[in-house]
Length: 277
Image (tube, rainbow, N blue to C red; front, side):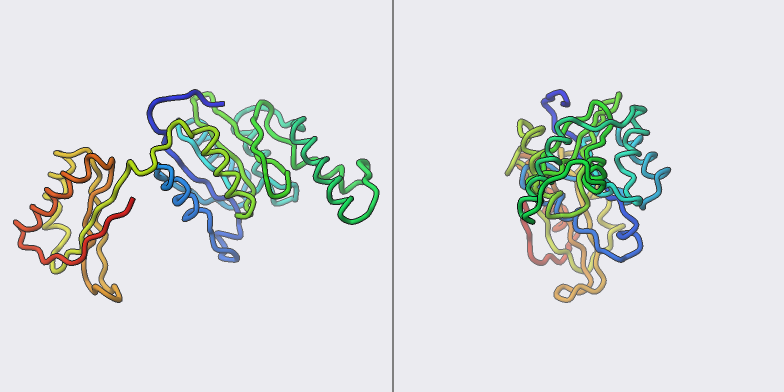
């Protein structure tokens, strides 16, 4: 397990699968992970998507393990020929693969349940059951992530530089409760629900270049991030900029007040204001 720290971790997301890059399936993990982090007072710092190429997967995982971030990795931990994530994780760590004893027991339990549901005798030596144990072959030294959907677990690994990568199936119905379990077991002491805030305003008839000095001034004077989201064809507001600040709730209020004051100096035409927590 990772060591407890007083500062929040930086979270990243890796999505693996040719089906995403080819357009056969639309990714659902990115918005959901953002949501799960946001309700706990965290944010997603980065995301990467990589196809079913072992060389690329290993390189991406090595980068994550060599960093200091907490990273969620979705996809490719099954036991079919196009599933490479478990093997690539071991290669990135420089450790061997082995059948995890807890994973073995969980997979056996699942196979016994399926046999009972089908009204058949459970045969552990049947070739398809022996093959299913491959889903519990993980890098040596990893930790198990429970799967409430069908017991087939995920796993977590820590790199020598402190990067912590948590591996989940690609199926949202399995991955999302497993991600919540990781968040609420490994990072619960760092949750800060309600402590982050975002405030913004719709600005009409202004150019980003003209407002950039104001944005830079706000970031110099306050411990917040300023964001600018221009739109040229919004169905309601038409051409506009959504300009705002985000950060710790205590800092956002004063920063936003200074932002509005600066916009009034620019004689900007302001529309609706928005608050997001």
